[in-house]
Image (tube, rainbow, N blue to C red; front, side):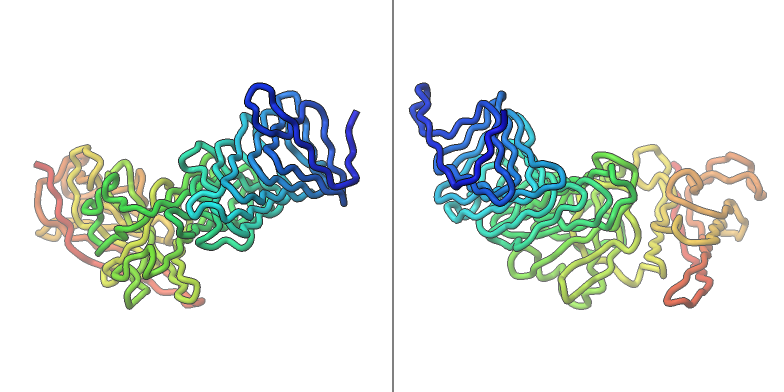
Length: 415
C-alpha cells in the first residue's frame, strides 16, 4: 500500500547500530504532485525501499539509495539537495530524478560527493556547489531531452557526465574550481551514448605534446577533455570552450584566433592530430568543422594556417611504411569528405608511380607501393627518395564551387 503525503513532514529515526540520525525508507514512499517532503537528517532508501517523487523533496543531508528512486512517467518532481555541510550521494542503484537542484556552499571544491549514479530526465539546476564524482566513482546521467541551468565556476560537475539520446548537449563539466564545458551536436540515434570529462591539468604527462603532426604549432599545456562514444555509431561535431586568464594559456588564444583548432590524441599513431576548428570569438568556443570519427582525448591548439587548404585539408608529406603506426601512409586529413578527389604521385623523373580517386584515410591510400598501372612494376615497394604529389578536389563555399589543385613534395623512406 502506498503512503501518499499531502503535508510537509520531517522524519528522523535513530539507528541503533550507527547511533546517527537517519530517515529510513524500507517500504513504499510516494510524494504526490503539489506535495512537499523534507528530511533534515540523512535519507536512506534501503534495498527494500521504493521512493517515488512527483512533488517536491528537500534533502538537507546525505542521500543513499539501494532500492528504487524514481518519478511517475508523465508526471514531474523536483528533488532539492540543499545542505549546510558536505552531502554524500551514495548507493548501489541508479536514482532517477525528473528535476534536481544543487544548492550547497559548504565546500569550494566538492559540496556534493557523488559515489552513485543519478539520472536526470528534465533539468538540473546548478545553484551553488560542485558535484564531484571524480574521486568517488559516481556518474551524472542526462537523458534524451534533459538539460541544465546556471552552471558556472561555483557550480557544475567535477568528473564524468553521460549524455543519452539524439539531442545536442552542453556538458556541465569542470575541474579545479573552473567550469569549462564541452558540447556535442545532435547524434543520429536515440540510443547513442556519449560521456565527457574535463581535466585542468597538463596533458603532456600522459600524452606527449611534442608528438604532434606538422600542422600543429603549439598545444594547450593547462587542460584537456575526454569524450567517449559508449554506445551507437553516430558521428558528432565537438565544441570546446576556453577562458584566457584562468585555464587557457594566452598563447593558445592569441590573435589571429582563426588559428585555434581542436586537436585529438591518436592512440594508434601516438601523436596529436588536427581536427580543425571553427572559432566563435564572442562565446569563446571552437567547433570541429566536420563530424569527428574518432574519440578519446581532446584539447585546444594553434595551427600553421598557411599549411591548411580549403575544406580543412592538410597534407603530411612524410611516409615511412615500416608498420610502426606512424606515417605508414600518405596522410591527407579530411580529403575523404571532399568530392571528386584525385591523388597522383610522381618520382623525380616525372614518372607516375601512383594514381587513385576517392582517396581516404583508411584503405585507399598510398603506402609506398606502385599501384601497377604505371611504368613501375606492380606491387613494388618504391625506393627511398623525394617524390611529388598532385592533389585535386571539388570545394564549395558560400554556394560557390571551385576545383582545388595542390602540388608539393613527398618524402618516402623505405630503407
